[in-house]
Length: 114
Length: 112
Image (cartoon, rainbow over all chains, first blue to last red; front, side, top):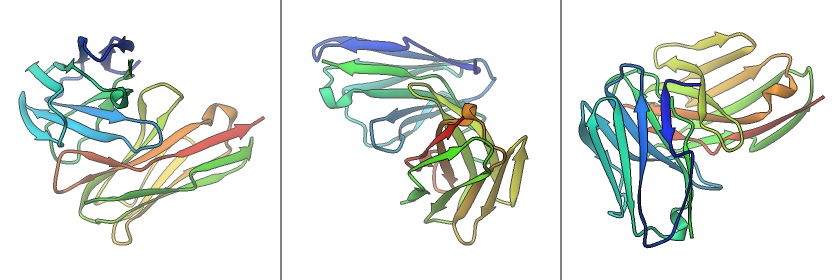
């Protein structure tokens, strides 16, 4: 088990639902990330928070809304999603946002949008 | 934009073989390069991290090399075992941003 946990591990939601993904890191890091992994595509960055400030938003649609209340917790609020948003959503953390710091990943949330 | 390519996309070998996975990247201005392992439906496990100033890193049966000037890295797995079966991902952290840029991975199957 890694020092990064994610809940829920699996989520099925309708297109009109609102749900949230949660990530928690126990490694003392101060940067946290959301990545999306779709079938047949490389992992792609969605958001980066460094010292609780959003420092990167990789052209993500507004139906995805991140929240970082403190350096240990990261949320991804979901609203009015599309079936093509079905994917594995991975959270990661590291020491500060840049530099030669290793990123540690959680187990992911498998999201299915019906 | 950094592009990361992994070859081969899939590989099947008998147990006990030594094997090499390849990774190439287009922009040599990187902070580091990480190799990850991903089991089906699971998250990523970091295997090795090579800083931009380093040439290689070793952990057990794994050895990763980095040639930044040519934009290449290799992951060498010695004496492969069925438990090594997984997808192996290469990712580079560029100087220009926070994000790791990933390749599509190499799917490895080691048969008993």
